[in-house]
Length: 154
Ligand SMILES: [Zn+2]
Image (cartoon, rainbow, N blue to C red; front, side):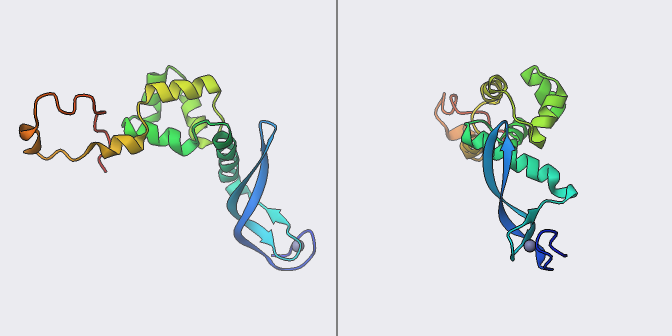
């Protein structure tokens, strides 16, 4: 493909560092996009735009201590909830949950609400151990009552 900036034909898809503006912040993130080795011109084509927007939003969220799209999705999955059920659980519209998972940046109050109502991070929930039939009989009474519910079962 011909580079629209320098006219050379070496524009190919490769992993480059792209930048974007998210809520007035300049953010940078790596992504595969069309890039010219000659002049450094980069271009994101239409079908990659949703990913570009999401990565930009995630870079902003990471910088500002907000949950990323993936983290929100992972928390919802750990609760084994559909987007509709999760929205109901949080007391928000399902459209909000869909947008957050696609890359819309949530308000800080929503972020706090998601954290409060989705329990410990999925990584912790996953470490709760296996539950084969015989093991619970050997455990002393009360063992594990403060552990989070086992929710991850791939
Ligand atoms: Zn070029």
